[in-house]
Image (cartoon, rainbow, N blue to C red; front, side):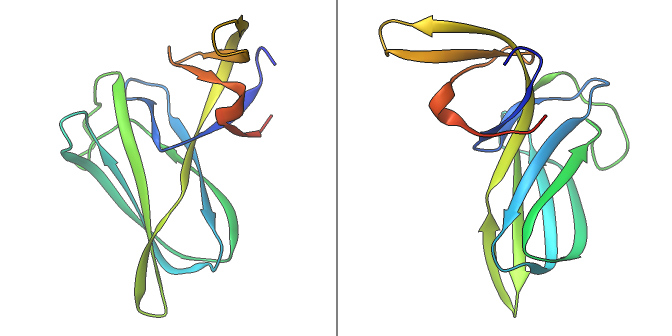
Length: 133
């Protein structure tokens, strides 16, 4: 598992700095318009991008770590969301953050494997949606 890229549900992850933040967005019905939004820890919108029309399935996107004006943001935890419009209805699309596993350890209290991610977060194996690479 060490060195593998995993998809963690929830849309929260490390971003900013020079390393792009990669996401997976799942669309069951596709979208006439998909909008990706990035919020800082204060809940302030720092970046928004209209992606356009997409077919059903999983789609990969990368956020450069810059705000809407092209300024590089500091390394921090950000929330990335996706909203899809299909046939005039808006719905929230699930977003997963792709992170690299830096180490794996056994958690005796939870009786589970915990994965330490390169961004500094720790998640249980049960929280992993996909092993991407």
